[in-house]
Length: 469
Image (tube, rainbow, N blue to C red; front, side):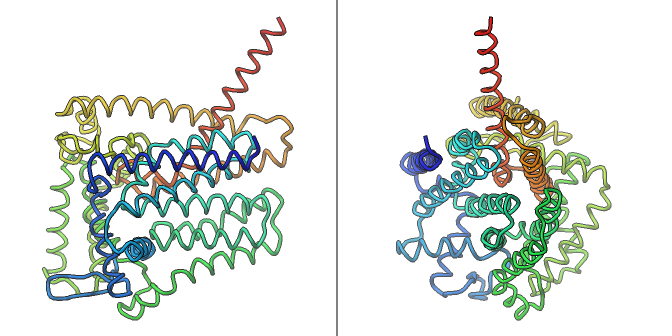
């Protein structure tokens, strides 16, 4: 089968899986099955964008419409386009198009894998097409699926640029990263990281030329230009160069309470209440009307609290959060499972996070949920073991007809993808959910594909030895 036909096969399978899953949820449960915690807010912001033609939020406390500062605008525009075309604010239409977009993302994952080894094309694409994390999250009205598409495009463009530093890959990389930042601001530090790491990797491969530095400058300029409208608005209205004002609440009400929980087992809800009271005390009960000032004050309170809790508790919270993000099965996000009555993870009693995890998995108050969790966790554990084996195979096993230059290239790309994985785990920190690992799924698919061809090679060698006897 030609690569072109293989890519069409991957796209068709991925699209079929996603449409079947989304329509199955909608027909079996209803529109609410496509909604997550923040979905109603996103749909409302989309309606406000259609009504006002601007990135604003309506407040029913008398303030009326005000600029939305907590989130980036691209996903809201995405939803607004669906609402403008259909004339309704319903989740099914955008959930279906997100499934189609995620199917295209599977194609980019497969193409990226093919750049490392043509044999990876089909297995990497099939793994991505059938990846539960991808198709479950694609059916949710959240920023994650759109963001994931730009991540896959970014990784593909970055690998292409390393293989052949050229303007077309520079422009594609700048567009992918810039639009990714416009979806979720967590990608912003990656702009700086890519501007440093890509030239270093190109120099190690002996492919860095003077034009490469111009490529980096243009890449950064494109990313900055795509943020110009939101940056200009924030400078004009709030006298700040920050893109969003969400960081303060995130640090105060999520990160700091989870570090506290890692220290002494304080439940997240109680920790959040303590942090909120501390914040109100420190500001004297008078909040600024500027959302960016409020965010800075919340962040300062959170930093002081985390410093007082200590480095050991902070590292512990990050390690536990990273482990949960890597090893929590995506099935728990799917409504047929997540809607099962049970005590939520953050409300589970326990003296420590590990104690809570043990209780949540093996002493859950809903046996059906517990069995699904245990079986899918063990399956995911086996997948992670295979991916680790595949990573080792890709890094250290020389392929037939592979040149020294090609081997160095593969190692450079895999190490960059490993750094990307560490970046995502560090940025998410103690905030734990299967959907937060979505940006590292391309790396998982490539490592899984390497594991499959390693097994295939082993079987072929074994068959050859038998024939030789």
